[in-house]
Length: 264
Image 1 (tube, rainbow, N blue to C red):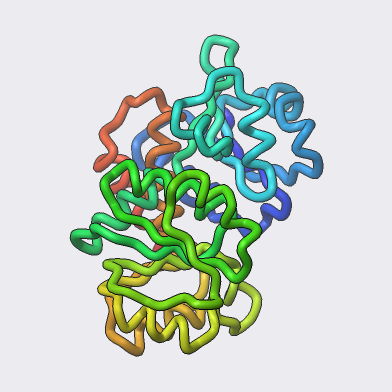
Image 2 (image 1 turned 135 degrees about the horizontal axis):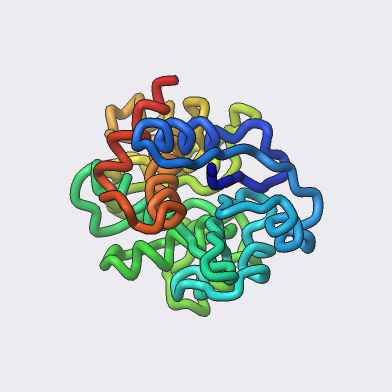
């Protein structure tokens, strides 16, 4: 009897999660099957999960906060950022996790030593990364176009900047968490500011996957080691798979089974 898993989102047709998880299920011989489900209303997440007879799901935009509300038990980090991207049914209870930020951190460690980071953008992904990376001893600055969304970061004690008056200093890594470059050729910051930030950085990371964004092209022109969101997708998927399968496998074993999906 196969256990059923899915990714919930809207839109969700572009998601590579089914490819990634089904490859790992098959390689490791686990009786799982993973699909996509377009969920229109976040309020119906829990009832949809249960009606479909699922064992676990990943949640993508725009339903990560709805998944937090749907969970019976939430791990401390996911509770802190109030965003859940992995739900697993265990003993009749929905357990909520956030694997995005720890997955990102696993990917970041592959670049080299990182002690400081400049996060561009101030949305939900930026919040999760800022909190998690700080918990790992990384010094965080956040820069955003306007001041409004920086209020939360300031309350949490992060050093914040708007574009006005931003002066770049040395950071080990610059991380783009905005959607700039996803559907167009725009940069996440005015070019002069971005140039200064990248000129003072050792690495660059974009959370967008599936294309080389203008941001990453600028990093490539400087020869900076870099990666896009596919590495974050892979690493968060490895941690989610670990939860899905009840910690049956080691993370490196899962990674070996899952990593070939990047070349498919």
